[in-house]
Image (cartoon, rainbow, N blue to C red; front, side):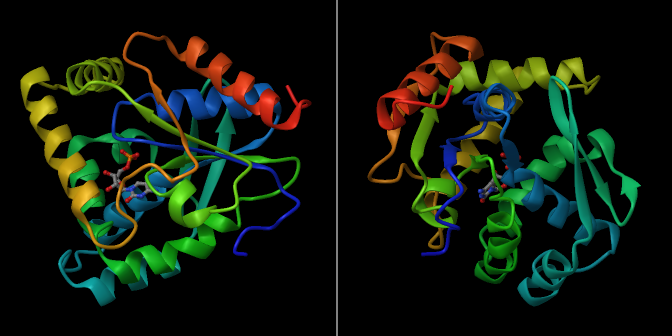
Length: 231
Ligand code: C5P
């Protein structure tokens, strides 16, 4: 068992723009649990590798960067945790489409995934953890108490990403975003190690016609029906 048994974990996996980040954070806040944005670890690996000028196709070097990451997540109220790398705040530089694309390229590398596995599992601390990503339920926390796989149709996901990036002041194009999201999804689903897919015991939720609050309520109801307690 890779997971600390006594720590309850909810995994929220799914493709870009499915709403898992927003939903995951809201859930963690409601439950008073810790939150892991595992995509941020892949983004930071890509960001730090690029900053160090290393060859992004050299798996061993990128994996070494992943192993050596000195990162801190500082929780924010009603916003994603702020990230510091080697004591320096990175801010929105992690959220660009360029870094998302590079993150998805380094995420294919088995040595990188192996380097990040224990770092992710270390986030499981009492009173509980909500972990968001692509392989939380299948690979990182296989014994999670509740596994959610969140989907939404690609157009809606592209619109959500568009809105998020615009709000951060990025200059983005909706049609291009849709294409980029589809390329990343295909790569994430096709890779041999820990591909994006629902765990066999995951609950699949389609968030296309729902707002984040409604999805959170559905997850809390599922948690309730499993445990009959925490809310
Ligand atoms: O979720 P986010 O968009 O920040 O993730 C960026 C990339 O990191 C994804 O496209 C995916 O390739 C990779 N990733 C992953 N496994 C995770 C989380 C993210 O492979 N658990």
